[in-house]
Image (tube, rainbow, N blue to C red; front, side, top):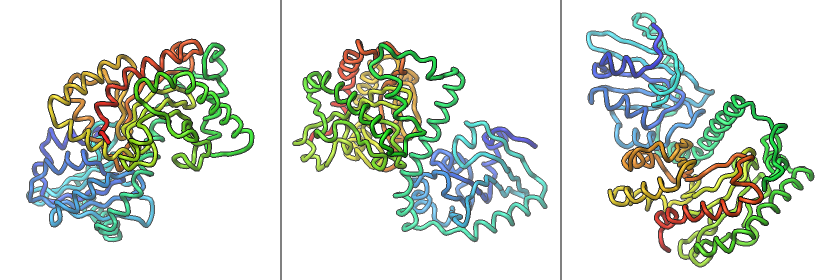
Length: 416
């Protein structure tokens, strides 16, 4: 029998409530996916899991399994080859069993949100064959351990950023293909940033450092520095500070960027040098800051509580503060006042601000943040042709948006 959503038999057929033992082979695990099944099976039920690390699996769920479920849940990691299988086998009362083989990983997306396909199996011989297959991979896997988790925690941010970038590029490709986007039809005569500025950051050039490409990047750097000169007085009135002279514009060397690929350049503003010292931070990237970013097909103004492994103090402070109902209400109010076009991105999931109906839904979304693994951004994007970033309007646009973001910046900032 073909199953499109695993959640349907799991919930409607009350399958999970009957489980005595389950065997799960999967390419990836998320906390939400783990909780979906774990919370529905009986507390006495045993669970055996084998997974690979080819797709990002939350280190937090690995740590939870290791700390909280020893004796009930065991997990082995298969590392001999890439592991992309997704198989769910459940032992039921009266020596019955059911299995599902398909495309969905042990994540909420794989179980209920994404378009997946599974085949339901109830034949006892086929299920025994699947169990034998499972045991073969499970026994060759490496048992979960504290050293393994610690090592993976350092690897995970890189894996996650690659996954996020891949999904973002796919979305961008789909949107551009649907819209029939072509630089040949884009007129940027009156825009501050020209076609050549965007193309200097194209994917085809991102990892190279030829003299020609470097010259293109220098031209973009010059444009950004000129823009800085036009807005710096307003920035200082807001009591924001630019980075050191050599760091006002991001690095021109791909080696200093994720995956050694230069796909964006930016201006950065935040606290003063004296405040950085009080916070024991070396650069603005380590604390909450504001960026004006140029990418291949957009300009963004963003408030960044932090990139992966950055902004720990501010982000943990923000998480604690969000436990207070009055703080949540005030934060939600300031966020919604930003106006149309603004979005919030956490762990690669970007949502429009106006999609949150109340502060409680926003709070649930922000709970997914983890400074060790994820980026946290609040911002607004402009397409190359938007009149707001024309040569005539870009300065006023940026000053207006900075005026909006500063209140959130102050609310999320931790004093030195």
